[in-house]
Image 1 (cartoon, rainbow, N blue to C red):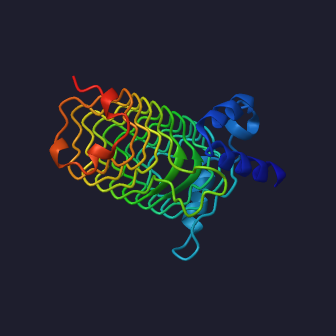
Image 2 (cartoon, helix red, strand yellow):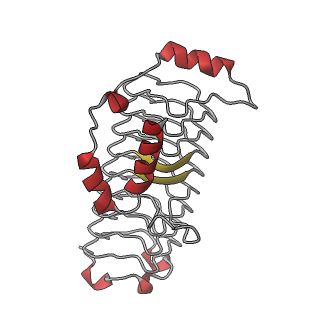
Length: 264
């Protein structure tokens, strides 16, 4: 119990600021049994899912499931709060409406998974692979530094900071150095999200909010930005080569450091 509480507190603190998160991760033993081992087998996970009902979803709160092959499983609405799923294979799994708050998914494989309407608050997902995953309408306040979401969907998802509740510091998605090529982010809330040095090549940002987002060094070449709101976004050294619909973007004149933008 004490270890679960400690990991939960650490997960919340890691999202407060990127620099502090990196320092804390360096001090955390990611090779400890708590982070790399599994206390259940795939068969035991399947048994819990089989016993679950619509009113009482399977509850894996705090479970150690790292390294398991859970690919293709139906984990719809499963509770995975504070669970450890580091390097776990969840490719093709169904996690619609699942609760993954404060879960650890470092280097997890979620390629082609469905996470529609899932909750990912204070989740640790550095280097996770979500190529082709569907996170439509999900709430994503996670550290996805170095993650891959090539061809993934975050349409109508909420990654931005809720400025009404920031008592622990700025809590929003972090996608530093992530590969977001061909990402579908139509109408997504990306306000204040950290996209520094991320690749958004060919991404569809139609109707998305990038208000006060950090886009320093990001590559938006070929991205669709029709009705995209750039108010307050920091474009220092960002690449915006051959964008689609820039003349129809919102508040582009109110973006920061436009003079330092790379256009060709």
